[in-house]
Image (tube, rainbow, N blue to C red; front, side, top):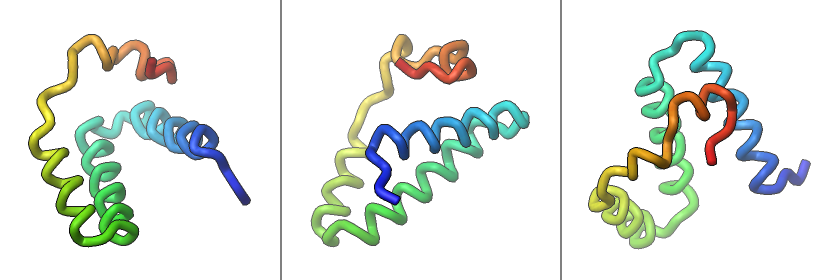
Length: 79
């Protein structure tokens, strides 16, 4: 199967919304997502690129409050 980025994103989004609907704490879901993402990056990037990515992540400031609206998230719309 050759999913596009959009296809894969939508599958992951659907699973995430289902987990939230099951009353799983969103921070638990986010932690699992982040852990899986870091594993994939570490497996696919060079050690130098992985370390550079971790530096960027650790130095990134908090997201703009207007970007994530809980009501839009629960409806499946994240833009």
